[in-house]
Structure formats: C-alpha cells, structure tokens
Length: 79
Length: 174
Image 1 (cartoon, chains in turn green, purple):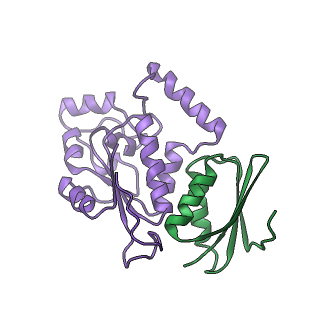
Image 2 (cartoon, chains in turn yellow, orange):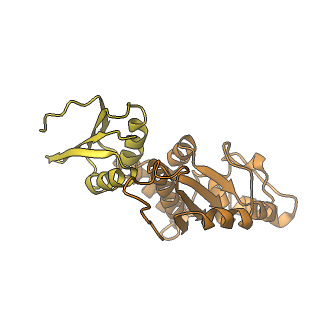
Image 3 (cartoon, rainbow over the protein chains, first blue to last red):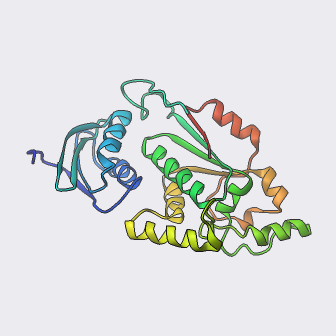
C-alpha cells in the first residue's frame, strides 16, 4: 500500500454506481485545497469511473490500488 | 450525446459558470427513471449544473404518493387513477407482470445496495439538481404542484427546456 497520509477517509464499500462518485464529490468539497481524500470502494466499476471523474473535475488522482476486490483511491483537492 | 472537454482543468471552475447538462425525462417507467436520476446525480458530482425536465409520463416520477385523484375533467381523473405515479409505484417497460417485475427488481437493488429511485431523487435535490416539471403536461393531466413532491422548480415549458439545452454540453432524452 502506498505511503500516503490522507486527511480524510471515505468508505464506499458495498456501494454501487453512482454512489462512489457522488459521495467522493461531496467529500472532496469538505476538505481544504491541497488536502488528500482516501476513498475505499468494492464496486468493480469504481476504477474507470473514479479515473474519469478525476480527469474531468481536475482533482488529482495521486494513486490507486486494487487488492482482493477492494479498491483504494487517493485524491488531492486542487481547487 | 456530446461530452466535450473544454480544458484540461475540467468542468469545475474552468469557466466562470459551470457547464450545463439537461435531461428530458419523458417516461414514467422504472427502468427509465433510474438512469435519469443516476446520470443527473453523477452529472452534479462532476460539477455540472444539471436540470431534469419532466414531461408526459415522466411527471409521474414527481407525483406525491398520496396525491389521490387529480384534475377536473373525468378523463384527467381516470388518468390519475391508472397512472397513479410516485417514485415508489413505477412500472417496468418490459417484464412488469402486474408489479411482480418491479418488486423483484427493487428487491435485487436493495440486496445489491443500489440506491433506490426515491433515494436518488432526494440526493439529486440535495446536490442542487433542478427538477423542472412541464407546465403543459401538468395542465393536460390536471396536475397541480400540490400533487407533486416538494423541492421542484417552477413549472415551465418547451421554450425553457430548449433555452437550457442550447447552452448545455450534454443533452439527453430518456
């Protein structure tokens, strides 16, 4: 697992589309610009969806992992 | 459907105003209402300014569960009985089987932790999605805002819809 210190952790385990994207968008608004949000999901659709969301909104996807059906994402709020 | 990326910065904050997305919801089928609300909430999550324009049977999604018989004309009254509406009583476009299909589909969704149409409707409102009922079809069906759920925008017509769609990056008719 990458050594990234998250300021906030959002657990979307068990949730399916569109909830991981929707909840992440709400959670990133609650942290400060420059801070890091870690999001955990089990939806197999989450990796492509979260990559697209980060690309379109401009928030930085610092890293992601996939282990045993659990996906972790680290986003930095950019604005 | 067009999804033009205006700049590397993305849709949030790339311009003074956020990009717009408009969905015309013309169906009261469960299997149409669901994608309408999934796409509306996801659009809002992308920072888009989302409007859903509900027309014809799409209006039934917005009816209160306790709306009862509405309208003045006997035909409007009959419509309100046959198309009872409310987000909890939507039918499937195929495999409805007198309610068996939706019951099974909603059970599966609940087991799989998929957000229900009602949950997505509330979420859409919380996220600032504009839910706009069509004035003409409300008049046609004899519906007033008293028959509808709270949190809707003022009813408007095709002119308003086109005005929004002309400025939108994504326009969908579902």
